[in-house]
Amino acid sequence: MRAIIRFANATAAWLTGLSGTVDESQAGPVSPKFAFRNRSEISQGEGMISIVIPCKNEADNIPPLLDEIEQHMAGRDFEVIIVDDGSTDDTPTVLAKEHARRPFRLRNVRHRESVGQSLSLRSGVLAADGAIVATIDGDGQNDPQYIPQLVDRLIEAGPGVGIACGQRVKRKDTRLKQLSSRFANWLRGSILGDKTRDSGCGLKVLHTDTFRRLPFFNGTHRFLPALVIQEGYDVVAIDVVDRPRRFGKSNYGILDRGMRGAMDLFGVWWLKRRRRQMPDGEEVRYD
Image (cartoon, rainbow, N blue to C red; front, side):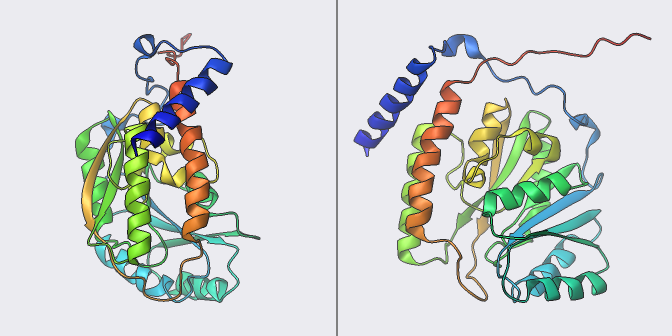
């Protein structure tokens, strides 16, 4: 394990050397300026919450998931954006029926072909009308009861916090998937110091303006806490109980995630090492 970390450090140092050194003592935190909205104006119950759900071939899981969201979000202003990532099952038909019968705002962003979870989240976040975005997986393993708790935790933490993360306990995945996830989380946390033991949990809540400023690539969703820290914000987390998938099977394999995740890990670390102090600027107004 230590050898892996030393190799990662050496790789990041080499990459940094290709384009000049960075004095970490002079870098300082990135200034969270130029937000689309003053964070101090947002309080519990105020402002729309956009719940973004990336889905691929989850037709059977969508109705019960929407039932739970409707139950747990009662009394709050919210919309649900389901990003259909090139599904080949009955997802379009199911979404049309759900749109007609739901009392809340249900939107459907459809990709003509599958582009993956990260870019699906991006499509949903760019379409969001809420000041806060909540993300949740479409397979039913994430319990929507935690969305209001994460929203409140983010707001209570103040404007210096950029993300509230769910951390799964009592995992219901296969033993192999649990072990691979545990190793990936350990390696990622050791290298990036992203202040969460479970970056892969789909339950996350962020300020929409912060989310839109993050770099997007095919794997962003695994590194949101680290990317938020690079923007100068802190991270908070709560424990969430994992559930077994209701219907269907995962669309992504362990080996596929592992290979991509390793490459992305080094890329995010390189970005971290290349981080420079952002200007603390404000607009000059001529009245």
